[in-house]
Length: 303
Length: 235
Image (cartoon, rainbow over all chains, first blue to last red; front, side, top):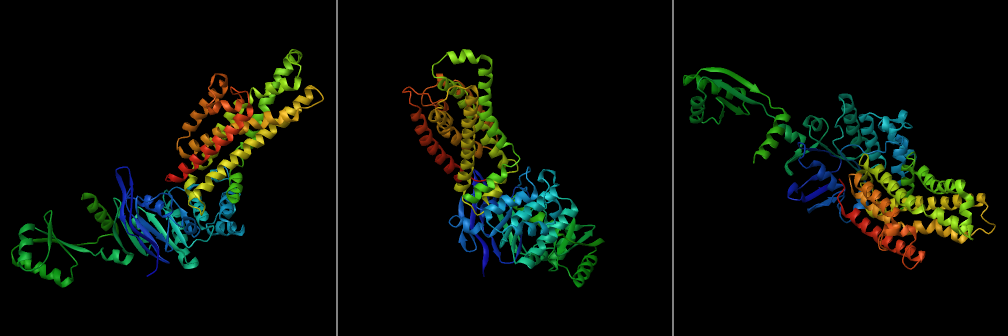
C-alpha cells in the first residue's frame, strides 16, 4: 500500500509537556484525511512537524517516501499548506501577496490568475488584503497553498472563524480538489460535523495520542442506535435479563442495549413483564458521531 | 536566494522603508544646513581645511542616524513577517531557512548602503553649495559615507537576529534605543563596544580598524544569528 504520509512514533514535547506522543499516521494517495481532535490535542503541532516547521523530539516522518528532516525542500516543493490563521501581508494587494510567493516558488504568472479564479477572489485581486473579511483572507490562504499545484495539501482548521456560507464554500472547494486535481488532502478540525462532510479517512487525536484511525464509514458504524428500557425497578430487571442470557447494561436506573433487533426488544419486554416488572418506556436513542467523538476523547482524558 | 530577495523587495512596498533610507542621510546633512546656515563664517574660520572640517561636522551625526536607522529598518522588516505570523507560510515553502535569513540580511545591507550612497551625494551637494573649495576630497567623502556603514554591520546582524527570533518587537526596539544611546556617547565607550565603531574612533586613530572589525564581527554575528534562526521551531 502506498502511503503519501507516514509517521512512526512521532513525538514532540515542549519542556515537560508532551504535546504529541507516538503518533502513527498513515495517509494514502487521493484521500481527504480528516484530522480530528479537541483544541490543544496536538493537531497543529503535528501539522507543523509535517511541514518541517518544528523538529520532532523523536520518531520519523516520511512524506512521498522521503524523510522530512533530510529532504525537506524537495518534499515541501510538492506540499501546499495553510497553518492556523492565514498569513498574509496586509499592506499588499491579493495579487501582490501571491506574487511574493510565486517568485519564491518559481511558477508561471498565469497561475496567480488561475488560483484567484479557483477561490473566486478575482474581482478583488488588486485590493489591499488589509480590508478583506476573514473568509476572503482564508480563501487567499488557500489560493496561496494551491499556487504550485501541490500533490499534498495540508489545511489546518481552514473553516475556523468563518460564517456558515463561508464554511460551505470552503467545503465545496476542498471536496473538488482531489477529484479535479488528484490531490491528497489533510484537513484538521475540532468539529466532527466538518470532517464528516468532507473526509474519507479519519484520524482522531486526543491529548497528543492517536485514538482512532480508519475510514469514515468505520467510524459511522460506531454510531449504532441503542435501545433503553425505563422500568420501575431497573436493577432487578437488569439481573433478570442477565439471568436469561441477555447481555444488557445498567446505568442510572435505566437498562440499555446496543445493537438491538426488533425481535430482541420484543423478547426483552416479554421477559421483564413475566418477572413482574412494569415497563414504562422503550426508547431508541440514536448516537450521533458527535457523541462518539466526545465519548472517545472524554474517555481518553479521564485516564 | 535571488528569488527570495526579489520577493523581499516586493514585501517592503508601501511600507515607507525607501523613504526612511532617504530621510536618514537627508537629516544628517540637513543638520549641517542649519549649522552652516546660522554660523557659516565662524565655522569656516575654525580650520584651514574647510572640506575636511565640514565632513567631520557631517560625520558627527552619521553614526547616530545609522544606529537608529538600523534599529527601525530591522524591526520593520521583521514586523512584516511577524504581523500575521507569515514566517510559518514562508518557511513552509521549499526554501532553506538559511537562505530566508540571508535574504533578509542582504535586503537590509542593500538599504543601508543605498542610504550611505545618498549620504555621499547629499554631503557633496551641500558642500559644493557652500563653496568650500575647488578641490573636492572625493576619497575622504567616500570614506566618511561608507566606512560607518561597514563598521555598523555587527549592529545590523545583532538587530536582525533579535528582531527575527523575538515575538515581542519591544525587545529589538529596546536594544535599538540602547544602541542609539551608546552611539550618542561613543566618546565614553571602550573600543570593544560595537556601538562605538560607526563613529570610526579608536585609540589608534585608524578608522580602517573599525571597518575591518565591523566586517569580521558582523559576519560572525550574522552566522550565529542565522544558525540560531534555523535551529528554532517556527511558532
